[in-house]
Image (cartoon, rainbow, N blue to C red):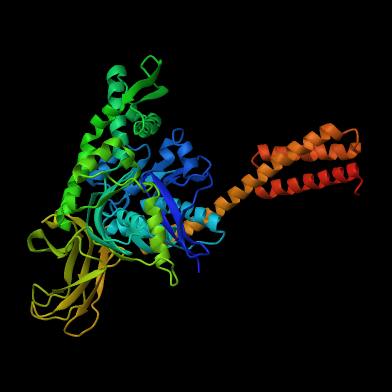
Length: 609
């Protein structure tokens, strides 16, 4: 049975972990480094002009020169409509193109292809899967994947779809702050009430939990799925671009390459100002003026300036904290430990705000970039039959689930912060005589009117026998499973039979779309494998050419002249194939021909023939 890996699928970076057990039975969580040796991998996907797909650090390295075909922060689009306020804000700030799918979802258009966010996320998940497989030396098919606590059903379903496309059975979807709490508190023997403040690259979550000897009980959760490090970067970008436009009458944000350079410089400055009081931003030749003269960005930014630019963002994170404490029925003074999660919590101003809000120094004993993946790995291990990890997780649903009723009112069936899994039954009937169907609109949110909440699906109870209004009684069960995912079934109370339903999801991928993407992915994987093999053979050929040509130079007086000429001719043909981008079969065949000749030269030199 393969191991269940834990994956933190982040907005900016992703991380993968596995639980290992020592001979003495000690449980250890291993954060698995990628091929570059880094413990986190950029959640970036790019497509080159030749059709090659790059994921992670290689994609990030070429982002400036290939800005329109490099996708980052796609997690901010997952499960969202293109007309939503959050996506509209991103449209003019994104170097890559965001488009509207036929169902209104936000998709991206890169490399000449339109793709859904789950499809792009699947490419990152595939890379994390490959990192784990390389370390373990065996196939990986199961994972626990984390999501922001405040993700709704559509976003959770989309994350599960991404896992399926990546060839992973997502055993459990768990909330990021909950995963962090597991890693922080698994060994705690005393009861402790903690707050997990999770400010990552694109989302913010706050959760209140009680921990007692392996039992993790979430009391309340809140958050903002569009607040994170990306927003801090954009404040810097906007500030620099505004000054530059005033001074030079050039809008840098209209040039996609300049925008990408600005964004990278902003992110670097933000990181440096966490440990330094000032930093330099130098971007030479970023634009030209009307006369064709080169223009440069060269300025100093101080920590105080950054804090002034982002004060409102930090304040925005505190309102969900207030709501979360209220829902949990506790005061800040009742919290015994505040755990910081997410790269943005390294910012001194964030740490100060958290300290002042909770009235205590936050706990900095966990790695904010790795703790979520570690918790996911522990949850994955606990799902095994003979697991060394003993724990019980009692999470909650972050948003109220309900239906639209008369006058467009949102009627709550399952309130937010209800412990999951859970279910609720509701009896529906007809409103007119001989009505043969009942329409039901299911939503998530906290607003009193249905139109202001997130539509999950519309479905019809059909095949109802003719009867006077109010006579048919159909019991509909709404379920939220341990992953926070919603499902529905219905029964006719008169006949006891399962009731037929026609469900129309308002967003997400259909089963046929997922199957199509999986098939395309398999084809792409095969093409990637050929491309990789070709690169390896080309490298081997280059090495063989170098050593052979050096040998011919040194030993030409000791080897038969005809053999020298044959070898030189073989070298020439192999080099031409490499320079002319020859196919794999041709290069390998010529490589083998040259290799055979070098063996013969060696035999003649050392008399082994």
